[in-house]
Amino acid sequence: MSLSFFSRLYRRCSASILLGTLLIAGAAAGADEAPIVRRISTADALKAAKFKVPPEYPAIARQLRVGGTVEVDVLINSTGEVDKVTLVNGDILLAKSVMSAVKKWKFTLKDANGGRAVTLLSFHFEP
Image (cartoon, rainbow, N blue to C red; front, side, top):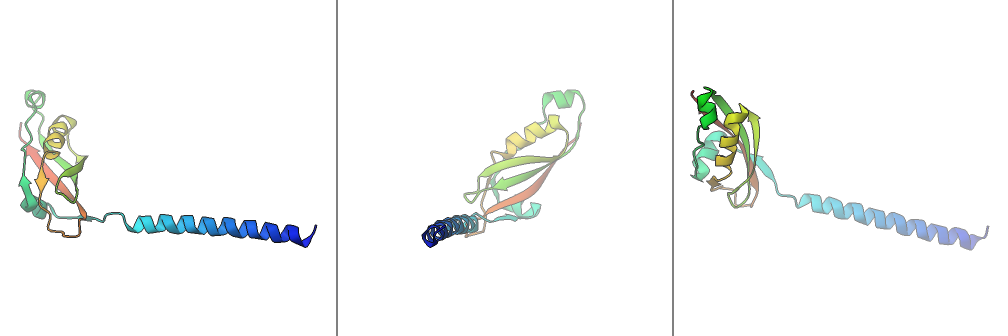
């Protein structure tokens, strides 16, 4: 094999390695721009809630005398709207009502950086 063959092979490999490095660096730079999600206390979240819809006690749960506490994790976006509600603990008959109501809540976050926040909210139902 001639020296020119190895020379061409070296150039191609170098170009591939350089391209791979640039792609990885670009992906890492994009990861830095992801919005920060911070956890806030329940008390701070309730103070920041400017619009709250109370969950209704579902008729079927009342009829079956189902009660207890429902806990949900709430992801709040930078504009104060609820992006996602995740059930942490509680009866599913009660949880559907809680999750539906909390999705309508609006918050005023004090973070000026435009970050998102997550908090834990609890709701208690008596049969």
